Length: 127
Image (cartoon, rainbow, N blue to C red; front, side, top):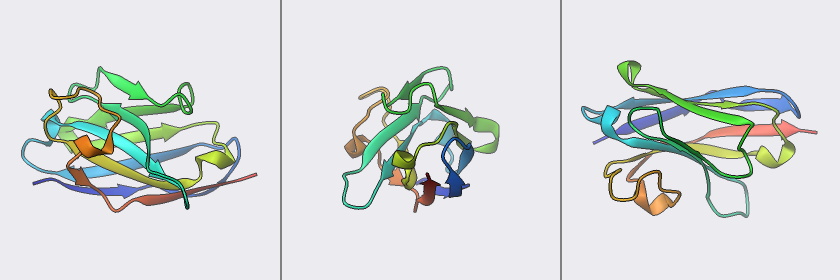
């Protein structure tokens, strides 16, 4: 079983940067693909980014490509989402999630493939 806790959210101005952290526990966490999703009020959960166990394969939604960077530190069981050039439309609750069967659908953008989820952290970007 994997436990995930997000942190680092807050209120920032457009153009600012923010770094989200996902702290994980679990014996085999380092072998899991980890994804970031977000959900704004009245909208469906949206894929943001994902990183494979090695950290060398990353995936991004078109809306954040070039602005966000996902990374992981398996020694510390941490996954990060560096968010630069934030826009008001980035406002949402951000969740990290773990795919325990990453070879089934590598770098999946579907939340159905992620078994474990954190509670989320709020990111608000003002204009």
